[in-house]
Image (cartoon, rainbow, N blue to C red; front, side, top):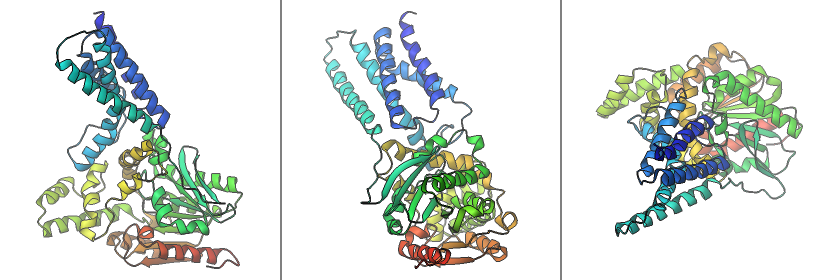
Amino acid sequence: MVRGVGLLPALVWGVLAAFWRPRGPIFGYEAVILIAVSVAVGAVAGRVYRSRSAIFLAPLLFVVAAEITRVGFTGPTVDFPRPSDLGVLALIVGRGFLALLTLLPMGVAAAYGAGSRRHSRNPFRWVGRFLTGVLAVVVLATAVVVALPGRVTPIPGGISELTYAGKLGLMIRGARADLPLLLFVPGSPGGSELAAMRQRLGGLEQRFLVVTVDRRGGGRSFGALDPTPTFTVEDEKRNVLDVTDYLRRRFRRDKIYLVAHSGGTIGATLAVQDEPGLFAAYVGVGQVADPTASDRTQYDDTLAWAREHGDASLVARLTEAGRPPYPTIYGYEPMIANEDRVYGSDNAGALLADAGAPELSPLDKVHVISGFLDAFDAYYPRVRTVDFAAQVPALSVPTYFVIGDREVPARVRDLNAWFAGLKAPHKEIVTLRNASHRAMFDQPAAFAALLDRVRAETIPGATP
């Protein structure tokens, strides 16, 4: 009984850690705290319990306590694991990453704690010590890596910084502080496009002060994910307006240029509708108009493609799921995973490329993936009632829509239906050749030329 007291800290730590950070650490110093406390808990467990079984019992009690404590939190990284590609990915970046920060340090420390009370002459003892030493080095290296910050490439004489507007992470870059302000809102729920904006559209930084926001729940905005019941379309609109107000106050501007992509266009469009006086122009790339109608046609296209190509597994998954909308991300998984194959586009790998941004810390890189999974699961089912043809009959700013010629046809169809009746002081649809859903990154020169024209058409005396 007395020995068992040594395992009690693991149980308590499981409750406290899960209550404090149910989805894992937000900032690097929090990850270091998780590691350090787990080491202390493991050392106590090993030394007081006086058995190598503490190596397994302490982490086990921690897991049980943590899983019970975070019951009620939803999302792929905290839900019951699913046997699918997204389910495996969620297991790795969710529970797997958290185990690296807590269970491994706890187990290693428990091994040292138990070993300090034992003096066995078993020759295999040295093998165990060697393996424990290797794992201790892994723990130490992990603590160092997760504490590293992101880094932003400087612009001589200009502005290049990472900052926050509330809980939303921003990257601000421009050759001069007096350039027109441009805010970019990424497409995916929890989306982060810091590297893509700098690498593919860096030329804009000579003509605009370019601000890229990480959407709620992803990348540097991971801390804004919870509480997920407030993750709504209205909240996404408010996030755009809040960042806009922050930028206008900081840089003393009346209006900004708003550029949004894909799912990010939902909140952006509603922000323009509600507060048109804040925006010089609006540019929607891969603009959403009626997501449920578009998804249903994409489902039909994917099912037809699967039957034509004899993909029985995909047919079965689609048939079992039925037509969208779905209550979780897993219903959308077959369409997400096969969009490139069905439409001949080239969007695969964008998520992992986004996670590679040097502007993101190692911890933020994990958040790009885990944040996408949990943010999509929380937010996207709530866009099912969006229908801009009915809800947004007019926009009171110059409005430009950009689509790739390899965009999903249903999205183009629904955009055209809304566009036909939309009232705006200026409206047009610009199609970029050899581009798909990420048209601005597929054809950056053409997109930059369009923004130069937008600037010239909306600023008296400006030249493209």
